[in-house]
Image (tube, rainbow, N blue to C red; front, top):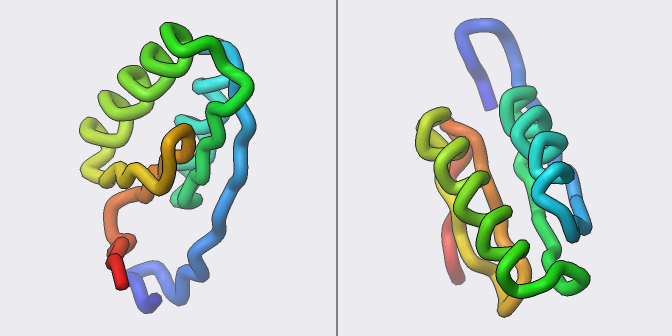
Amino acid sequence: METPFGVWLPQVTILRSCRLSDAQNAVEAIRQRHCVLLQLEDAEPAEAQRIVDFLSGAISALDGQVERIGECTFLFAPAGVTVSHS
């Protein structure tokens, strides 16, 4: 993708999270313009909900988007990344 700062190649970071404190790693990856695939299978349901809520707020503040991929899997994409379904 061409940007005003040169060519940007999208990167994907895969995180398996089970604690809210792990969510900060996802926010840092998004701030570095990585797409984050978050897997929450190992998290307790209440903790998983807190993680998704936290990251949803962060991605909204950064003008990105969130897509639910599966039961416990979410994709968080930074601004400028188009997520399409086929």
